[in-house]
Image 1 (tube, helix red, strand yellow):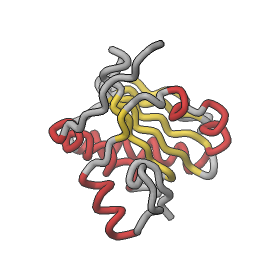
Image 2 (cartoon, one colour):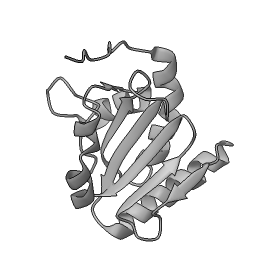
Image 3 (cartoon, helix red, strand yellow):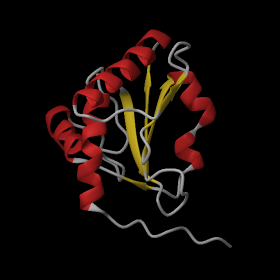
Image 4 (cartoon, one colour):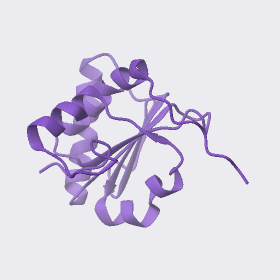
Length: 147
């Protein structure tokens, strides 16, 4: 039996990732989930996953993230799927951002595939919860809708 990695909070990493979350929320990304995958893989430290309700919105979210992060001196190493708008993968080295079309996100279920990863709540997510409210469950702030 494989034991799951310890899910310890890392306030420094959580705060560093807030810039990515803030960029994502600028275009009404839905159901953002931030996963700490460091104990599980060497390809990245974190996955930031969200979706849009149309292929146009998916592309708009990804383009906004690129612009917002570039203004802060953070440039993507690569971006795939921007034109199609079904699944945009943005590689920022230690952070991989997945922007899905809603049905594509459900089909691939990355949150399920990486279920052993710790869910992170950044200061930006905490503020959004305070402002907008979120459902009462153990994953508050890790998985909620933004309207």
